Structures are given as C-alpha cells and as structure tokens.
Image 1 (cartoon, chains in turn blue, brown):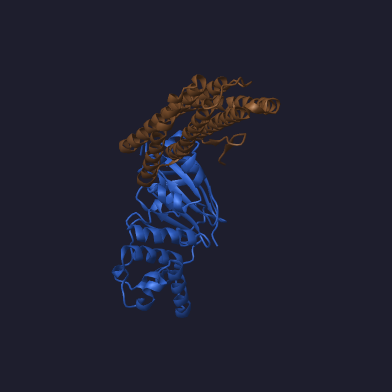
Image 2 (cartoon, chains in turn cyan, red):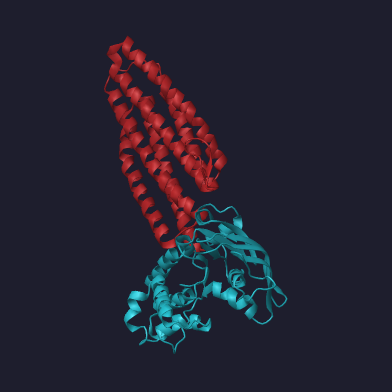
Length: 253
Length: 222
C-alpha cells in the first residue's frame, strides 16, 4: 500500500542558487498528486528531493523535513539507497537497460537488492509487468527480446514495471508521457490511475490536461515556491491565486 | 499570451453582445407593438427571430471549437461555459418576444378594452434587467449582475398582481376574457424574460467570481 508524504520547510540549492524555497506540502497516500509549473519553477527538483535524487547532482543539496510514511528521508540514519527503493522513480525518456532482456530489466532492481530466489523473482517480474499493463504484450518474449526493442510506450511501461518490482510505496513520475504518442500517453495515464490503488503517485507534468485527467490534487510551483495546492478540479476551474490562474489559462509560462 | 485564443474569446464576446442587442430590440419592438397596437412592430419581431436563431448556432459552434482546440482552463473555461448558457437564455428571450408579438396580433384583432394592468411599465423593468445583465457581461462586473438579481422579485410581484387583477376582470366582465387572457400571457412572457435576465446575471457572476449563486446563496467550489 502507498503511504503519505509530509514535507515541511524544504529548501533545495544548486550551489548557491536556491531552487526550492521553504516548501510545505502534504501528499495523501494512494492518491495521484500532480506538480505543475513553468520551466525552472522547481517542480522536478521538488520530486527529486523526495527520494534524495537531487543530491546526486554535484553541489546540489537540500534541507528540511520529508517524511514518507514513518521514514524520515533526511533523518540522520537515513540510507539513500533504501530511500530510493521505497520511493521509485520514472523519468521523461524511457531508459531501459539496452542490452538486457525484458525480464532482465524488470529483475535488475531485485538483483541489485540481493534477491536470489528464482521462483519468487519470476512471480515478482510477472506481477510488476501486469501492474504496468505490459504483461500481455511481452509474456512470450520475456527472455528473447531486449528492452530496447520495444516501442517507446512499451519501454516506458517497462521502466514503470522495473520501478514497481522492488515494491516501493511511492512512485515519482517526472514527465512520464511527454516523449510518447497520444495512444501510449493514454495507456500510461490509465495505468497511473490504476496504480494509485497500490501506490502513492506524484507526477510532474507540463501538460495541464494530463494533470487534470490523472491527478486528484495539484500543486502549482513558481520560482521555487509552492503557490497553490488544492483539489485538481479547483485548480483548473476556480484557482484562488491570480498567478495560478494566469498560468493555467496560458497567460504566462 | 495565447493571442489566437484571446482573439477567439473576444470574437465570442462580440457575437454574444450582438445577439443580446437583437434580443433587446425584439423586446422593445414587442412592447412598442403593445403600446401602439401597430402590427408592423409585431411583423418586425417575427422577421427578426431567424437572425437570433442563427446567432445562437454560430455562438455554440465557436464555443465548441474553442473548447476542443484550445482546452481552456479556469476563468477562460468559466467564460465559455457562461457564454453557452447565456446564449441559450438569449435565444429564449427572442422566443418570448415572438410570443408577445403573437399575443399583440391577437389583441389588435379584438376590440380595444381598458385593462387594469400596466404592461409597458412591466416591460420597461424587464428590458432594463436584460440591458443591465448584458452590461455586466460586457464589463465583467459581478456587482451590476447582482443588481439584476435584486430586480427579479419586483417583476415577479408585477406578474402576480396582473394575474389577480386580470382574473378579477374576466370574472366581472366576461366579454373581455380574450383580451385579458392575451395580456395575462404577455405578463407571463415578460416574467419569463426577467427569469432569463436573472440566469444571465448568475452566469456572469459564475464567470467573474467562480461562485454559483443560483437558487439563493453563493456556492464556492471547495
């Protein structure tokens, strides 16, 4: 099951540049929450702070409190590897391991985590591919075909399956459909909607219609600040802040 | 700024205001027909109706195109929804003006009788409501729209009074039943136009403030 995320006073820097300014945000469990905003507003930085990916960039660092369920992401005993296992991430461009088979791609995270039981691994790979709505399309070629041989939309679902295989509680998606055609996009969106039964999903998107279609809650970021965070219906019909209104109506950004 | 989209919104507004002008003109002509008992004005109302119907179709079409092509959000989405609803109300205003014109044609064919109802006064009030409602739409002024809502009660009372007086008249002097019935229906048509003006005002408030003020009270989305 998914867990909630509590963010308090989160600041993030790239060297001396402040990219996120004192963010407070409460993301409910088993919901899809969208993060929108113009380029450079800090939305990707925000999600990358949630699983400590931000600090992998040289000179980038974050401070503040991020709690994912009971886990204190920035607590003193926190292990970034364990954080990233529990908080999976899917990126804009599908990035399957090109030389690995479909099976190998999904099992990669399990193997890295020291998983050796073949039967259980088979089960987890099948479960993950089913959850990612890809099983029926690839079940006959699990070992024969490489991840790179799949279509863009299938590759992205493969990456989702790979993220799900290690049984995370939260799934972060950074523009997961922006490189895909409308049919593949629609499959990914349907999938996101289904995934919230099992996971808490946070999705960064430039596509406001996509946020409106998949998310129950939407946060609008601007220049490193969270300007407005509310039910998606409210953000797209009657936003409270003029800046949100200007952005969602295309008057800037 | 999405200039093509803004042009589309401006065009939509202009078309709706032009249609509003036609609807106002229809009310004024129908009232003039009643005042003067001149069938020429009735014919003008009847002849003007197709233009209102055409405008309704054009506005629906342009709204649909903007929704499909531009996927508007927030205030723009509320604006187009308001336009679609106001469009339907204005078309009905045109229909009610036609109904009045037809009643007047019937009245003219009968001997003139003195009836205890001031239809021109009621028509003035109704016409002002439509005018103000369109003015609130033109300027996006919710406070002007609110004033329109206040006026609806006055017109309702006028219609109720007309009903009582005319029924009494019909009872006292059955020879003028037909004329009294025509005037009663005209009062009813005017009261319906006032209701449409009220709807228009409510839609303007929804567009400007995002508040649903129908059926009393203001409902804001939570």
